[in-house]
Picture (cartoon, rainbow, N blue to C red):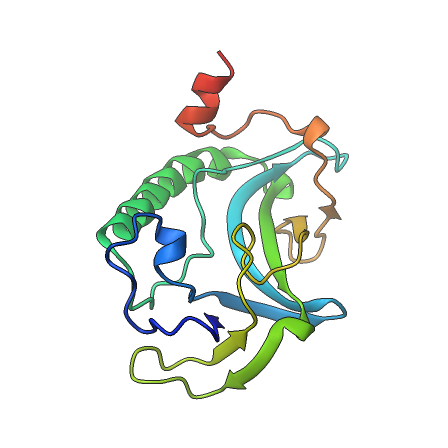
Length: 186
């Protein structure tokens, strides 16, 4: 996804300290076209959902949605990916002992409104051979996406999958929290 007005492509601004301002193009995983725009997967985490579809938790320290074919990946990105891998391993230890009926995925999609899309280049270029979606100017906080996102919490059962809207007041502690969140709660 590319801001059509960012003339720095394909070279990020090396002087810019804020990574989000150094470039306005990102590699995402496309999920689907829906009534409100393109849905772009931005988080996928191991999760728990109780038998009543009420109590739940997710492994927020990991993220299986990150793409591995990003030519702009930096050393900092590598550190984040390595941290996600370590957190995933820890979360898998917890997830594997849950009853299968309570194992779930927590997913979050960003929503790109159709009216923000200027053009689509299906073939890409020498930097990234996947499709390029050109969009209007990025909002400094949310980029080209809607103010809301789509969440899904669903069990993995092939024949008896259950799904619910995750309500924060019903979140329980099954998976580790980020260290900053633990420090803030003290």
